[in-house]
Length: 124
Image 1 (cartoon, rainbow, N blue to C red):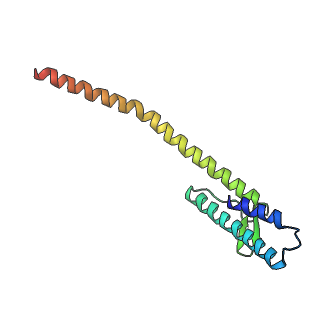
Image 2 (cartoon, helix red, strand yellow):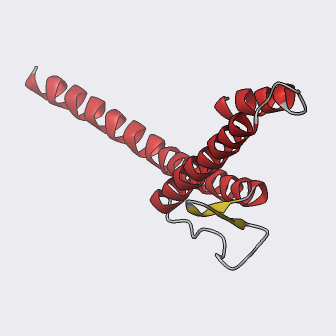
Image 3 (tube, one colour):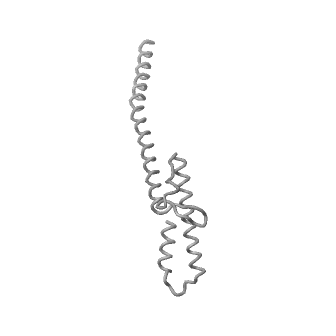
C-alpha cells in the first residue's frame, strides 16, 4: 500500500516544473529505502520458512543499491511465490493430519461412551 502511494506520488510529481533536484533525489532515496525494506522483510520471511533466496549472482533478481544488494521486482515476485507455495504446502500437511486424526478421535469418543455405558449397566 505504501509503495503504491509513493509510486502514485512520483508519477504525479515527475516532470512538474516545480520539482527541485533535491526533492527528486529525496524521492529516489525513499524509493530505494522502500526496496531495501521490502527485500529485507521478504528475505526474513523466506528464512523463517527455510526457503533459499534467489542466487546473489543473478542480475535479474538482485540489483546494487546504496544500502547493498536489494531484490528487483522480479526477485520479489519470485520470492513471494516461493513463500506462498511453502505456506500452501504446510497448510495441506496440517489438513492431512486433521483428516487422519478426526476418525481416531471419534473412535476414542465412541469407545469411552461404550465403556461408560457398560460400567453403568454392570453396576445395576
